[in-house]
Amino acid sequence: ILSVLSGKTNFQLQYQLIFSLWCLTFNPTIAEKFPHTGAIQILGDILSESTKEKVIRIILGTFRNILEKIDDRELERETALQMVQCKTLKTIELMDSKKFDDAELNDDVEFLNDKLHSSVQDFSSFDEYVSEVKSGRLQWSPVHKSEKFWRENAQKFNDKDFELLKILIKILEVQSDTLALCVAVHDIGEY
Image (cartoon, rainbow, N blue to C red; front, side):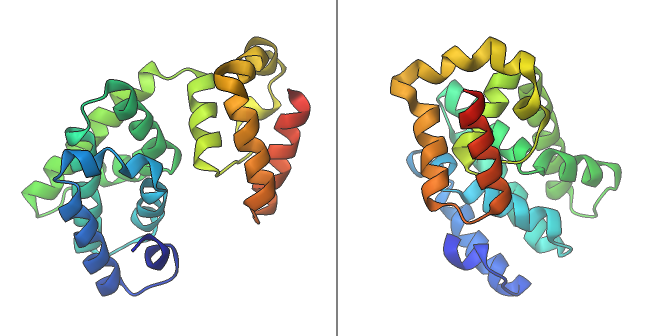
């Protein structure tokens, strides 16, 4: 489903595939797996590009279910950060300014807006960096070029058996996006 959604598909097929994902998110065990599949990023990309209300509604419903079904506070926080990083919060803020005829859609927009805003307030720059690296979607965000960030956080790269360094190296091995490759090389050099 995700490989089809990550390509260019018409909105009806997008809707039907995302509807399948939405149904899966009612199961808490499955919902907790979503943050590790790349689904958040793919759905976030579709959300930011879609003009069809039914596609928007089903994505927001999926995101809401995921956040509501996850019991682990840390995983919920990581999931919210993934949503923020794939521009979901910005898209939702724009949607919040225009009201839809669908009350359920407005409710989902309000819920996600509140949830993501409250989550963002708790994030440190290192938390954001970790989430960005784990997503594999590296961009030149301010932390990458901040001497202060590297001075304060370089030692944290040794944590969890060098997990972040291993992820950066994996990005170099499998990523084809030149921007992500440049950022990964830079970050390894800064370490």
